[in-house]
Image 1 (cartoon, rainbow, N blue to C red):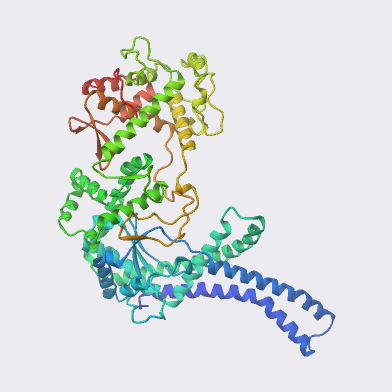
Image 2: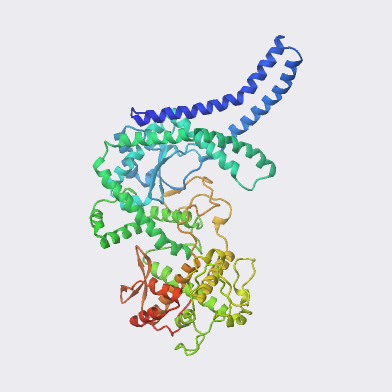
Amino acid sequence: MGVEAGAQAARSRALVVLRIRSRALAVALLPAAVAVILLAGAATGRLVGPGWDVARWILTPAAVLVLLAAAGIALVVARARPAMSPTIRIREETAPDLYRMVRDLADRLDVPAPSAIALTPDCDSWLEDRTHRAHGPPPAEEHDDIAGGGRHPQRRHPVAPVLVIGSPFLWWMRVGELRAVLAPVVAGTGPSAHPDIAAARRFVRGLDAAVAVASAPHRGQMSRAVLAGVGWAARLLLRSCRVHAAEMERGVAAAAAERAQAVDYGLRIVAQEQVGLAYAGWDRLLTRVALPAWRMGRWPSRLDAGVVAALTELSRRDRLAEGFASRLGERPACDLLEEPGAVDEAASLLAARLFHGGPAGPGPDWSPVGWTEYPEEVVDRKWRVDAARLHRVLDAMGVRPAPGSPAPNTGGPTLSRVLDHLTDPGDRLTDPGERLTGPGNRLTDQGARLTDQADHLTDRAGETPFTTRGPEPPPTDDAEDLSGTTPRSATLAARLRAELSREQATATPGPSATAPSTAASPPAGSPTTADPAALWDDRSLPLFPLQPPRTARELLADHLTAMICCAAMDTAGATPGLDWLDGPTLLHNGERTADLAPKILTLIEDGDATPLRTWLAELGIRPEKPVRLV
């Protein structure tokens, strides 16, 4: 370890953590030591008498119990599996240039090279220790090739940590920028190799893993009682060394940053700007583009390439980002991979698993989709599925075309049916707790029509279906969200949410809902490998949900947008499109249409369809014509 001030501070904090471990061991051995003294005193005839005999009879069993408890706690801490990030491991033969760049960077920094390289679908990079026996022994050739361990078949030094790189960095950053960003990360292998810091980290990770084991559900009564004591002891030790462990990590980071200052310092300042830009583009791509596809059972197979397209589009729209697009002429970091397309596909599948909870591998209901097929396979299908759900709910509510409506009474799904139903000159729902029933509600006369369709919609599986006594009030958690809307909008929004909940409850659970499995399985022929079996528990997927569940108001707005887009495609020749920054979009005459959100909100909140009907007339959309549903 170098002479950096941060490294010395990290080592001193590591010694404090190790002293806490030693004190815990001393406390566990203290009763046994006293018992040994008492027994030795009895054997030598020095500590004799009734009082000493009573002390021996009490302390000896107590010492044995304390030793057994301490041994059990130590066994759990030693064998508990530390948490490991879900990643895609990159073999050296599939990315020799990337491994060579990392090795050269480590040589310039005079630190041990990382033992392996892995990718994660996130905009971050870090070092991760995977030397625990539960993680499995890494292939010797991988670690020897990059870490220079081939000269010592029997290692006498700790294995270096694994370098985890955010996959969006490889596609957006240039090779020099990636090297500058990874410099302070790779520099962290120096302090990590110090025995005191490594031992302190192992101790803290073991305590954290022991707490996780003690907190795991689905255990027997006896196991819960035993593990409760283990968890209490582990939490006590964690609280004792928490501050020192945090200061140790800060010292390691400071030492790594100080050592990396001599490597591409000027380029690193520019590269940090690219980190923030890549994060913004990645977040936008996941929430606006990937999430609609995941909800349809499709996963985009080139998410990392989509980041480049999204940020290029951003540079075209934003003058502040004009200089970023000029970098695209330089060599991208993904050229360091032998098969970047296969790596992108594996990272995209893992992203869908982590952020949405999709299955571990492709299947009939979980298939990849390319960017060229996205408008037809995702956007068009999404709109028609939502429009079909909207009309099913209207059918269950017994909604018919309004008298005098220009829509023909053919029973087909039309946009006019939706607009006529939501056009309501009555007062808005201003009180969050206001009931939607009452003499002034214009939907009361439709209550009798709901008798035959009541079983079609349920709030959730196993709960009471909607009654036939008029419109039900919105759910309690949606009451505030639906305030300020018309009674008809609030009722339809609540029914849509109930219908969507029923569909989700009756859907067949995927692999993520069953037993734990490995990380996302790479596609066949992929140059990547999944992490060893059972390294991370996927029973709580998604681990990182992108967005909270949509509210009833948002669901209604989405379904209205879908119905309008279906009418535009079927009656005005519009086409579905993909906007890299905003997701699904409607194209009319090859151009993106104006934003519909203000007009739809006017209809939902005020019951006024005039702005929307004016917009429909300008584009030549005929709301009275039936649309095609799925």
